[in-house]
Length: 318
Image (cartoon, rainbow, N blue to C red):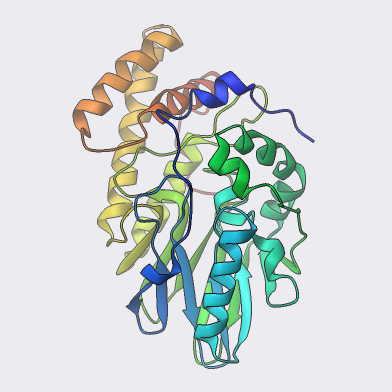
């Protein structure tokens, strides 16, 4: 199991005591024909969860944090399915998105890309312990988590036929995590992005050297640009309000500015902490309403590392 940050470092990630990260399935709403979102309601560590239906099957996107949340999602999806087959996929391996998959065993087929399957196996146990440090409500939700293996692992892409509707699962390559994937419903113009996109929040950079350095700012920007070029009608972010293509534009603009301001200061031989302080002040002025300010410095650290590694050009893609 990979080592992860000490308790004090994890505590610094949160600005205040976290509330119970409970998923409320009663708040689900339909955003397109037979495409539902169970919203996060602005609660930390609650993701936007998707329910996508076809004639023969229903796909669930993300589980919520822990078995109790996932049971509510599973039961809600089964009721919505009315006898249709159930599938489960997760946008990436982080606990609030995937650490309830165990309760779908026997009820749904769980499928993810190969990199995410490796993340679940290699990083999952460490992240479970790290998230348990985030307070009693979170630890209680994670008390009975049992890691599970996906039923089906694909390489880079998988087209899932739900019956009269094909849903596209696409691995993006290393960005927010090593195993990120997006879920596209082409006939509805809907794109589920996981934490590649947040609404009204600074991008979450899980940058914890030397314990975890899988996040890549340059590759994340390349992925965001590719997603924006698809021009989806509806974007479901990992956290925050469902919106339109402007959400993708916002992510591109922020990551571009973060990279530019960080690397300009590195060119001038400014120290990393001074860069983090200056860039954070600049970004807060630019996006005063956004939450998650603690992640700006993590993003600066990641991009400083990529500057040092010679990754001076944003790659065209993976």
